[in-house]
Image 1: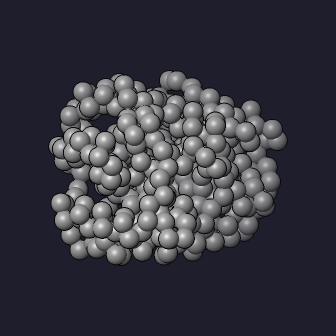
Image 2: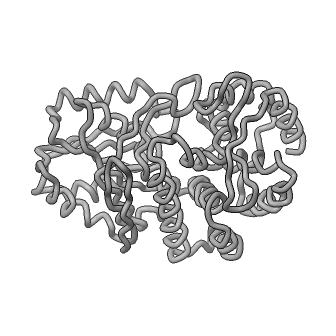
Length: 357
């Protein structure tokens, strides 16, 4: 097991990553001051069925707890579920000493963190990720819920007390969720570390042969890159925006599909390909990446999506400004920059991208 120290202006906290990292949960809770009187576990039906008993077994005899199980899927990251969790916490007597445990993937981490960040103006929470994708979302303090008008439009910055990333919990992931998380690993490499990107290209040919050692290296380096960026810019006033590479179109695709039928990372993969197609110096990189993604089983864009509808979604992105859409582009691997692009020009480019398939 390894420990990575996350350093932000508002809080420093550990990421415990490796097999059986879950055993760190109770020792971690025992070091907290003030000691938590009770806990709230927020999870989803799928993860709860697989791993909730493991967490409960660790807590038995040490802490009292209550559990909320939401339905699985990013569409459940809703105001209704946020309100339900808040009501449940109030009804069950959570106070300012309490701790919320976010047991699940990015959806659970986001909504549980938002509940923690706003309950009684902010209580503590611990991220317990169960997906590859959550190596990105569990670190950095972004929390929130979706709105029909866009993804992650409502939320707060609220750092966890710790991230407990037990890689033995990843063995039950379906392949589309592996692809989803791996896309964010690729994103980290493209914006920050050319050698890491080349290592991924050389070593990952199929997810069926993706070894535990390769997985641990990929997740650890991805978290380190995320930490390097968040340390510089906790609240996305500058370089943290580079972590949105691929997300402007990716979020639009997810929203247009009502957060169903495609995973977050699969949508981001398409968004990265589009971003790379926009500049001549990165078009060959995009073509090579597209071939690699195809071998790894990433889906193509659904053919019923249209450029005007997607541009309409992109205009509602948090990073958009009047008449322009701000996108993260690359000069080269490891050299990202933010570009403001006229919406009419971008719609024409997107039309071309959609026609190429």
